[in-house]
Amino acid sequence: MSRSLLSRLFSSLLTLFLVSLLIFFFFQFIPGDPVLSRLGEEADPALEALLRKELGLDLPLAQRYLNWMLHLAHGDLGQSIRYNLPVNQLIGQRLPSTLALAAWSFFLTVVIAIPLGLWLARHSQDSAGFAVNAFSQLGIAIPSFWLAILLMLVFGVKLNWLPINGYVPWSVSPWGFLRSMLLPGLAISCSSVAIVVRYLRASLLDQMLQDYVRTARNKGLSENVILYRHVLRNALIPVLTILGVLLVNILSGSIVIESTFSIPGLGQLLQGAIRSRDLPLVQGITLYISIVVTFGFLLVDLLSVWVDPRIRDRGADNE
Image 1 (cartoon, rainbow, N blue to C red):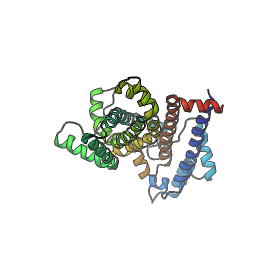
Image 2 (tube, helix red, strand yellow):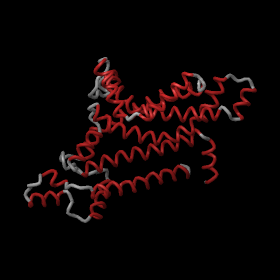
Image 3 (tube, rainbow, N blue to C red):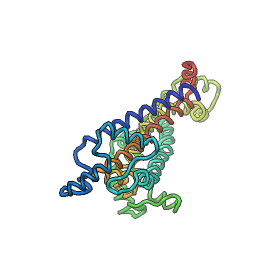
Image 4 (cartoon, helix red, strand yellow):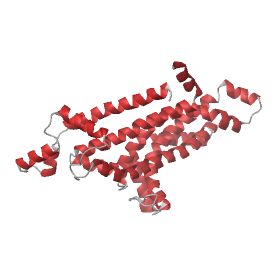
């Protein structure tokens, strides 16, 4: 394993440690009492004290954080106050639908944005190119929840082409999965598509002005060969750097859109946990999302190193 990879891995683990500190201490100071949320304001003081001791809420804050980290090191996120079930079990039940929605939205982003960005770069001076460029600006400006409602109204209520709520796992019915995920996936990926299109178009136009493109033209290579074999790979490098940001955008969008389309994922679970002050569950879900995002950034870093030989060479020089 190279030193640069170890350095990135260490940086990711350090980030997760700092995130765990923020998650734990932030949720300790927000208003509300999880014990009273469960037992009610008129609860028996003896029963309240017993539950507080059972949950470890009577310990000093530093001791509670240390206990949380020790349990975390063994893969134990604690017990949900609201459901009285292990947090791991609750997350495990909801995580597949959230990850499926996020992965589907990311897939839609890639398969729509890259061909559109290529087409837009080749027709940047056409009227159609201006129209698509304006559409991409609109895509960035439209909030995902508003677009979700619009898609539901048009394709679910008016045209009755697609379901507007519910979730069908891929293992149960691939066709049902695609039908149930199409509208939420489009609502989430719209802004990401617009961002990737604009970055890719600008990067392609910049690469087309480089010396190696002029050299390739002088050798008689066709525009398609130059574009797809030489330019596209270089143009994708700056796009890869924003994929980590888009991953955060897609995951946060998934949590909001889940509620709109009644998808039983982490978003619904997190909203219920916040309303009931279920701190172990809120901390567990937030930490899970942080882990996915952190290692998503790590994956993007590794992809950038793999795609761009200059980054790989710089890493080798530093070793």
